Image (tube, rainbow, N blue to C red; front, top):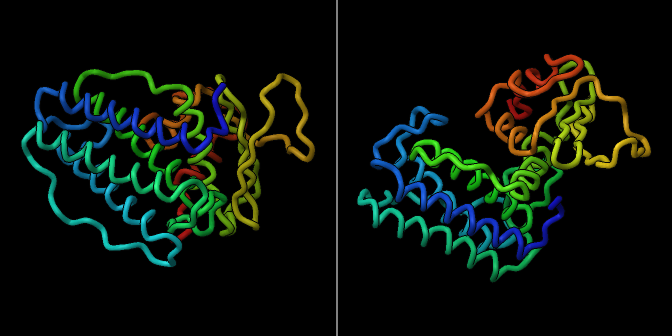
Length: 260
């Protein structure tokens, strides 16, 4: 099981998922095909979105510690397929170069101020790996070349999503609860929801292993790390995975916007 990846490994996986995205662009029947998992977008739209995101985050990393992000890029991506693939490769390389130059744990802006994820380059590369992996999956579906997400990417991205997108210091507006996310190919994560917010923890993977202070979950969702990640990103319905306990709690979490 691959988890707790170091900075060079995260950079390598980001390049790997970028390559998978470019290969999907090359294999698609056209850039105007619809993306089934992002029905408002064509494959071109998806490529422009992800490429502009890589360029935006390269500027964020290069800027270092900041309370505000730099301006978002506004230039349109090329519409020719080969030019678009080259533009996306350059976009990803700009991000990788900025991350290599800054090194691990260098401070930078991040929108997740109230979350557990660190606002530094390690947090940034994990966020972009997650985003790139999911959109590479989207692009593969659109191109008709669907492929399984590498397990180490899925494991890291599932945990990163809980730490970045689910954890917060904003009070949980419902009855306090503990949710368990059990990866059949990795660990189980618990998300404790209370008046103190939402806090994610990883629990042991060995059967029967005890975690000091761990609570009995009110609800559990079980699947591979890739399947959990697909649920997190709305690519798969919650009910598609194995559920135990009060499944409505997962819907409450999915619908909750702490910043609303």
